[in-house]
Length: 83
Image 1 (cartoon, rainbow, N blue to C red):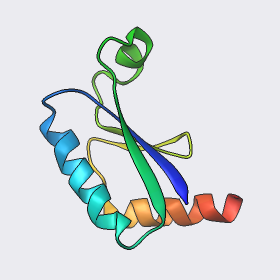
Image 2: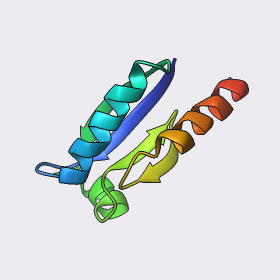
Image 3: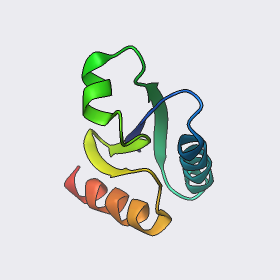
Image 4: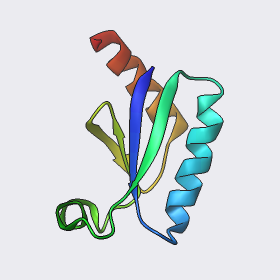
């Protein structure tokens, strides 16, 4: 399965919405996801501070602020074909 990482921070409502969307999609698609809190990591704060949640698929930035199921599905397909 693909590796999905979500950069997020504490008390981030959009992040919670994104996690719920990913959990729902997991029932249908083959991927693992983990969340990484950016607080206290200066480089991540600088890079992603204004955009969380930021969603990466296999290390490539996919989207930020929300998970669009259609876009997510087609991105996973593309990554699969590359593997």
